[in-house]
Each structure stands twice: as C-alpha cells, then as structure tokens.
Image (cartoon, rainbow, N blue to C red; front, side, top):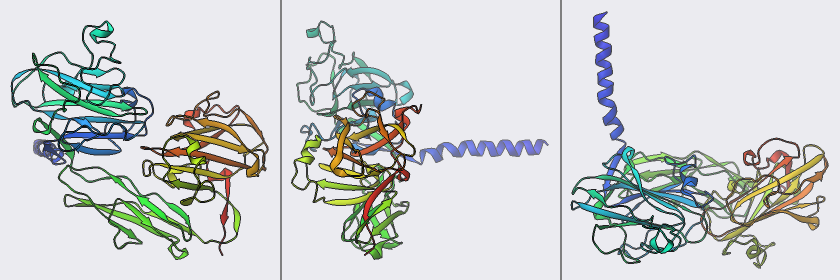
Length: 488
C-alpha cells in the first residue's frame, strides 16, 4: 500500500513539474512591440461593449504586433496614423513596459471613442489598476486637449482624466500595461504616451511610447479562427473564399496554399482565393487552405463549392439571391441606388440558404460595396408577422403584398449599423403585417458597406411569440425561395 501511494505521489510530482514548462512552451515574448487584439463588429462607444463581448479577451478577430503604442499603426518613422479605417470595433493593446530610468511617470491616453489605460505594479495582469481614461473621444495624439474631458480644469475639474497620477517605476523592471478602446462610427484611434514628473506636457501630435521599452507575448501555436465558407455560384461567375487565423508573432510570416479536392491550386497562395468563371464541372468541389507559419502547418475545414448550370430560371425553394455591387463608397443605401450598375449589373451573384449575407461574404472580407438580397417568403401559418433587419452598415427592408417585385414597400430600416435585432417600435423592426399561409411574398433587403465589418440579416417573428428579438436567427431556407437558373 505504501509503495502504491509513493508511486502515485511521484507521478503527481512529475505531472506538476512538467505542466508549467509545457504551458510556457506555448507562448513567446517578443521585444520591441505591443500586441493589438482587434474585435470587429461590436456596436456602441463604451469600453464595456468590448470587455462584455463573448469573444473577449481570448478570441480576437485579428492580432497585430505594433512598433508604437498606437492603433491604427502609422509609418515606421512614427508619423501619425490614418484616423478613420473601420467602424464598430474594439481593440486591446497590451503587453509589458520596461522603463530605462527609475522615476515617477505620468501616463496619457488619447482615443476615439472611449478608452481605458491599465497598469500593473509588476508583470502580472492580475495586479493591474485603472490609471487613466478617455471619457468621450478626442483626436489622434490629442494628449492635452480639454474638449470632451469633463474632468479637465477648463471644464471646472482639477485634473484631466486622460492623464494618470505620477507612478513610480523602477529601471529595467517589467510592468504589465493594457489599453482598451471602443470605436463606434467616424474617426478611430488609440495611443498612449508618458512624461517624467515635472517635465513639460507632451505636445499635441507627439509620438506615443516606442518599441524600445515595449514587449508582448503571443501564442506560438498556429490556429485557424475562421474557416472558408461554402459558396453557391452560377456557372461562369466568380467564387471567392477566405480564411482568418491567429498571429504567432511579428517575425513569423504567413504563407497560404489553397487546394481543390486535395490538390494544390496553382498560384493560389494568398489569404483570399478567387476562382473566376467556375464551371458545372466544379460543382461539389471541396476547397481547403493550408496556412503555414513558424514551421507549423494547419489546414482548414472543407468549404463546399456548388455551381449551378445556367438555364431558364425556375422557382427553387430554400434560397434567396445575393447580388453585390463593388466599388461604391460611403454608408447610405442611397449610394447603392444611385450607382449605374444597380440593379441590372451586379459584380457578383450568389445564392444563400438563409437570409444572412455572411454565407456569401464573410464578415469584414470586402469594403466599399452595396448588396441586394431578394427572393420569396412563405409564412408558416396565417397571422400577423414582424420583420427585423440588422446590418453593417445601413440597410432598408422591403416586402411586397404578393409575389411581385413591383409591389414592394419599405417596412424597416437600419440607419446606422451593427446592432442586434430590435424589439417592436424600433426603426429596424416592421409594424405587424398580415400574411397568409401558402402565399408567397417578394422580400428584398438593400444594404451598404463602407469600411470595416460588413453583413446583413433578416429575421421574422409571429405576433404573440414571446422569443426576444435579440435571440432570433436569420430566416432559414425553409421559408424562402428564389428564381435560380435551371440546368441548361
């Protein structure tokens, strides 16, 4: 008995001794950079919208390593970055700061929109404390601006909330540091700098903290975070696939190799795959991509390519049509309507098995375009129904009194972007509409993508159904139909 207990104890000690080194082997510290984790497609302006997102902090949409404590990144010479690249996202810049001198330091944060700056007493995240915040928004590197900072002396306060109290730091000691900001619409920027206590305040536009005192860690295990999605296309059109993955560090370039049915596609070595002029012979092809970095290779799940032969269009249950019109800037739907390509000359056409544009264009895969999703809706039973739209960016939802496109009427609208399905009374939600079972109604959604995230969805709910709007799913193919070219 004693021998068994001793052997069990020895085994436990061996496991405990092995586990920490195994865990540490999964991460690596990189000098000269701060880590930036981006979380796309989050509405609102508050930092809590980022930290409350279920993806935060472990499942970022994208990770970058930055030479300056600033996002978006500017040039390597420290010049200011662009000030409006995406909409409706959040970012967490985090890692370590190692001062060269022992001194008391005052930190500054500037962001658009809200931001928070956290600092630890050591290199442990658990010890971090909030030391400064951007209460509303300010411009790029606007360190000492008093606008939209109610705590500033010019606003009746005693100290601007975007600057910290003096913090004593020791030379060559590593401290955990973190800045989080939330971008709603318009400009977007986050930057952090410091001065030694008693030094002049930083001038507007002065550079943020630089890489010579920064470091960051990364998971060195390569992972695919978004697999290529299935694609349904007409013969003779273009099919596109894309992949997202984590970054295992700034010195690990990523390479790609796309495959069809297990064989390499010549020249297909980019993050996005474009297959022009797909043929009926490609129907059922299985598309994968192998991502490689740092001596690691990981292969995506299969994405099915469905190619429909072009013939006389017939009513096909289970789908709606997706038409995209590229090269159109701005966010308003009117920009799509004013484009000469609309409606007869889309750049891309696909068919969706639910009322969800992400089946055709994965989120944040395209910029500056408009799209039309259209088809026929059949209610499951006679009654009063509400319809819901949500999109990034603006959208307009239409429903006909019958199966004729000519009788479309606008029933709901998203004027901004990115929210959940809203309850009764919101502009994104229609008034109750009487519909008959067995009857088909033409339905159409127009949406406009500017920059950043891009998607659009429509849901429905019978009046009296107690399901919360935010829990509704896009309309499934069970209630949809589209005129799809038949086999020729």
